[in-house]
Image (cartoon, rainbow, N blue to C red):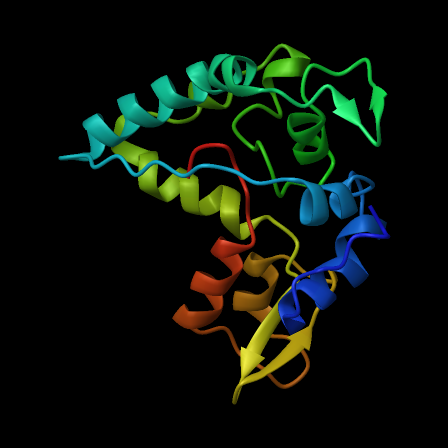
Length: 180
């Protein structure tokens, strides 16, 4: 992956300097250089509809990945993975991807604590607990490199910076659950 150039954007350089070295980030270089995806936007009409769609699409996401996965080959070698891309996303940073699945593998299910009345609040809580990558001030990116979560940033700030709604929107864009 290192022989493939990153897109020439400062944000990717900061991500590349942090994510591969954080907990569960070892395959971030593969994600940033060797993967592509398709995005589908689904509207919802109310909290209950959002909950049902979020749950449904999270449940079928592994099957969709399996149907579309065509990448068991990596660097001209057949791997033991059905999808090198899907595997890379499992190791792209602590709490950054697949936070709806993190408890399923340990016998839990995040949807036990997600009910439709609290769907937006609980979704945001998950985002708030993800380590931060950077913030932007006056068109300059300030690396944070996982030193704090967004929740900590809102409570204590970072250096001399206080959290803004723009910071939250940027932070949310750096979280990569299958369904968002």
